[in-house]
Image 1 (cartoon, rainbow, N blue to C red):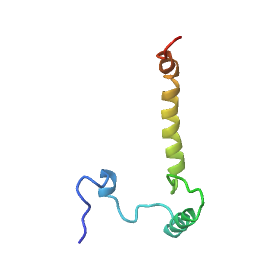
Image 2 (image 1 turned 30 degrees about the vertical axis):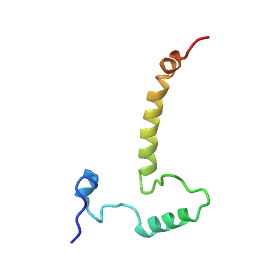
Image 3 (image 1 turned 180 degrees about the vertical axis):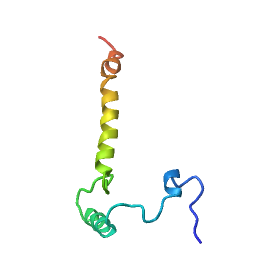
Length: 80
């Protein structure tokens, strides 16, 4: 019997049902294999229903927060 190494498995996955992935496992595997043959593969691969939208929303929120700090960030530059 295998067990995850304590502290290494994200909590939300520890109790996840192995059949909980809503996507097609064959399509998932094919997409991963196709990506390995890409001469310029993405650093991170967003796969699964809703994954792109969730990541896009999170990154958009972070970008908005960063943009709100632009004036402050640039205000600390040395003046000559």
